[in-house]
Amino acid sequence: MLVLAVVAIVGPQVTSADPNAIDVTSRFRGPSAIHPLGTDDLGRDTLARIVYGSRTSLVIAFLATLMGTLGGHAIGLLSGFVGGWLDALIMRIDDLFFAIPTLLVAIGIVALFGASAQTTILALGIAYIPFYARLVRGAVVGVRSRMYVDASRVVGSSGLRLISTDIMPGVTPVALVQSTALLGYALVDEASLGFLGLGVQPPDASWGAMINAGRQFVFQAPWLTVIPGVAVIVAVFAINLVGDGLRDALDPRLAQRAGG
Image (cartoon, rainbow, N blue to C red; front, side, top):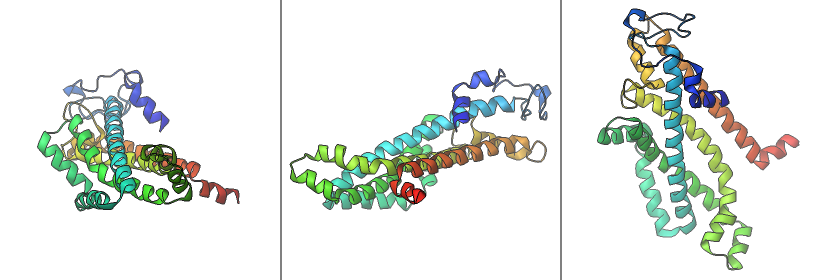
């Protein structure tokens, strides 16, 4: 995961090739010293496009996850803490969104505002809010009934203080782990939108768009689909491992079992 982040940040230093430079005389060149990962149907360097595509795909996935996390966190905290009719109303609206697949919600938003990197972030962020709101709401409901929260309420703590000092510490570990898992989903969904032509638009590179562009040449130049596909798999696998590590580190019950 650290390697992927570094590559995304310092992309121009990894390769000097221009990811959008067209050279029709070098179409479908296999891996070589000049082009370590070959070239595509327009003679563009695949390594350069993978590197620049990593920046695009990871940034979109991160910002969409951040948007879904913050929005869902706020809604989940409000719903779980206030309860009553407001909680019921928010959860029923949440149920409506759950009836529609996440990717379909994102496709609908992209269809309204047009395909671009900004629209992809907005679409995925909005699509993730209901999932995260339900998760946080459930965690808040579980924490707010604990004795230390009741004790704090009895001594006169305000609602804001209850949320910030008593409820949030119990919710944050669960939220952090799920945010990491959501980042993996966001990366796959971004690649899916790019594959459908609804994500980042040419000539800019993204892993999903590269898979889509290379699928018609899968037998002639298999590296055009295999390499960005492997990049997506490795990135999601790394993110999931980080999420598992955070879960083990932040869950005291798992630590106690390991110690036992």
